[in-house]
Image (cartoon, rainbow, N blue to C red; front, side, top):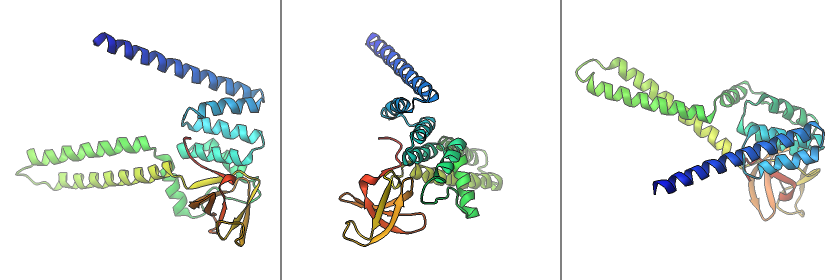
Length: 256
């Protein structure tokens, strides 16, 4: 039995190493194609990696750059947004997204003009989910330690100081859990999308017989509020809402 487990484990390690080397080779080929300005071939290779459900900010960034070089402005914006969804403080992706948005027909702004909103976004972007998970575990362990300390060592003594530190740690734990929840909700969010069609007409209902509300163009970013039978009710950044066809846009998702 031990021999069988050892063989299977060795086989798994060999397969894992082989798969990692294969992906690295594909990545190197894609980068070489891009640097030699063979953008279509580079895109095919980058997408080959994406089709294996690899969630990586650099990969999305490279796909966005390749789409931009091919003149696919909507797809470039889509993948810059994907890169930032994985790594919100990805400076190069932020700059490229801002530049791409400046070239869209419909003027869009990347940063919020509200100081508090901008501050909140900055805080969220600088703290990763992994760091929050580590902090939450650390705070929880410290709380358990202090509670045990008060029970064992401070049973008949003044507990003001350890109680104070315990309460502070509980507040920090609750804060880290709250931030983790907010970041996780954004990470798995499926309600943001980018228009890939040259243009789309927004109607007051899910049918072309309804009143025209607006016209948007390639690269427009919006929120999806409702979907039914090939149509979606979207909300633009300016608050305007309307129904557009589902085949005109793609959601900003991190895996297919």
